[in-house]
View 1 (cartoon, rainbow, N blue to C red):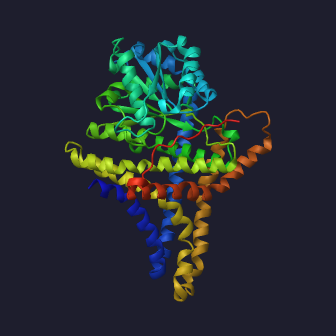
View 2 (cartoon, rainbow, N blue to C red):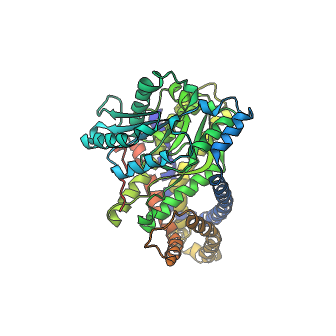
View 3 (tube, one colour):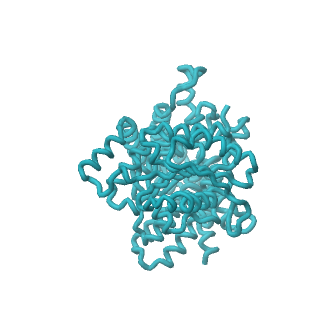
Length: 497
């Protein structure tokens, strides 16, 4: 049954793609009507999601201006929370492989620059043994510079070739969490209920109020012990060094996450996020034999708590690196691999379906809701852009003479072009917000660069297919084939000019 569940995402995707050609040849009229209706659906969805994007953008801008440390002091003082903020500790995990010292140092500087008492921070920098002595040297160098500022600073070295593990973030994070639990938390007798753990990619730079708004949401959330906390990922640390295609893809990922923040009922954990340490201990930490640990931890908690788990949107950003390599084609190659790794999150489908079958306490409605949304999400990722840009012409080329002489055939390209032109309002909205999200530009940046950064969004149809559908189809196909075709964890190289 597990193998069948692994085949489902690819079966749906390839069934749709093959069906496009089959139906366009045998039933062109049906396909023509379908594509018009699908384009209208896409237009309505674009408008709907654009409202969510603008809403989250406004909330984020508002949250960036608030002194959240003062807020949490007030709610504790006024008895609006059962916990006192001074009881909270922040455990921060930075797993890394072979990232440069400069990248890691900037991340630690950002934590030190937080508007939050640094003596409430326990930091763990987790090197990989397979990265060699250079990684340990970098870790020691970082510790020597920063350890005096925090309550604790622990270096861990994750052994290579441990049985039952896939080398990657998940197995390293579990090693880090277990070690800090044993060597720091248990020795200091810090209650697990008072610890929030933040798992950051090593290039993650937090803004000054991150730990304040995180603590605030933890204190006011109705069931904080059953909640994850998700910031907005901004890939802007090196955005001015990234090629235009990489910038569009990076901002597209950010915008999707911003839209999801406005729909918390659909929100799952992604990349850098935070959660209660006790919940992490209760589920046995991250699974060590998978690639997509950032999303899997959500499913572990959801199934482990019989559906009673939530992701709280912080509407507050953390900053990470866009995909940049020394050469343009190197950036494109890495960008594709990164998107394929993210699309490999479809490996969660068999996990959640097995979990739903085994867990008899979880409400049936929640099982149906998450099954549909998850399958629909991966299917849309793989097929929607192909449906939009292929079905408008497939019936014309494959439908035969009878269809080509029809009025519907003549008008189909014009109708679809008109609807997609209306839908381009979403691209215009994204282009404007992307300019507003840019950090302070470097000295070489001129006013006319902003115009180029707006015009780059004309590349979005291309990026949706090349860096959207194609890596998603490949990932789902590899999952279905199994065995040697399965993906291991690929570390995105970090490069700054």
